[in-house]
Length: 218
Image (cartoon, rainbow, N blue to C red; front, side, top):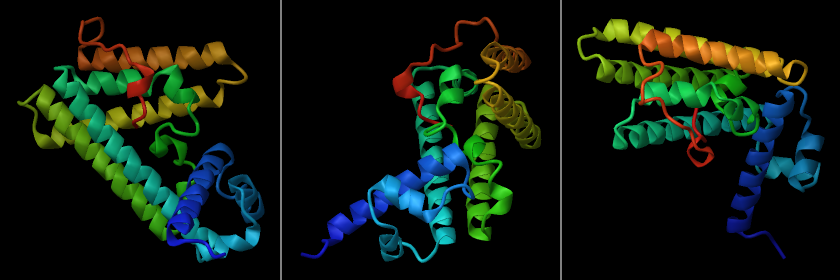
């Protein structure tokens, strides 16, 4: 009995989800097709029923991951505005949290894949670059909302600087979280504090308590 179109689509999504998880955990080059398909519950030969090559798979995984990340960020911004909170503060609080740092499988894809991008295909690099520009644009709007007197160029520059600090801080903390957990937490604490001070919001009531159910966004 053949596989239905619906089952084939479900199998393909399962392979994509497994690939993203393994790529995040081990790196793209370290994951072979045999390991990937075994982890997904299929034979290696079945891979080519769904993808032309590993490169094609990687490009699709990357595009899917960053697209979902952007949608989650948009949802988080809308949620924060709906509660009359400060989206920038919420983003910093969530992004530089131990929960986000430790969530290798589902955390921010921009940080999760940053070391892989230069070695991937042009299509994968393009997907990542477009998502990064979109993140900068969204953060620019948050800066303009916070301070309408800012010129757009200034807001954009601040968005790039802030996001660069956020990604760098989370990566440094993640790199020592297993060997030096206290240092990893200290990196997060000081990074978060300095960014909130720069925004002029540290200690104000608008600092948010981040709940796990709301935290699945970059």
